[in-house]
Length: 116
Image (cartoon, rainbow, N blue to C red; front, side, top):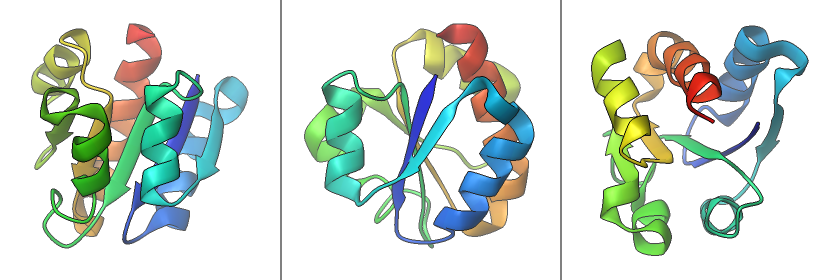
């Protein structure tokens, strides 16, 4: 699985959380928002993660523009059922606030691994 990190804040922390959770099971790249969303759209990445102060603005604006609103979700808590349902429905881009990174990133990537 390949995960790209866009958004505006906390990119290194997000990468560290992914690597800690997934180890060698995935490839992680930090990109600018447009490149990250294009990687998902073209099939070069499976998942887009990004953080900003609201969890939906700077974290997902380009992902929404490129992938469409239906492929994106703002995550406000680590509700495994909601995240699992989002992945099953085709969502590939997830935004959250930096303060939620430690809580939601491990859940998203673990569930995404099972969904890919």
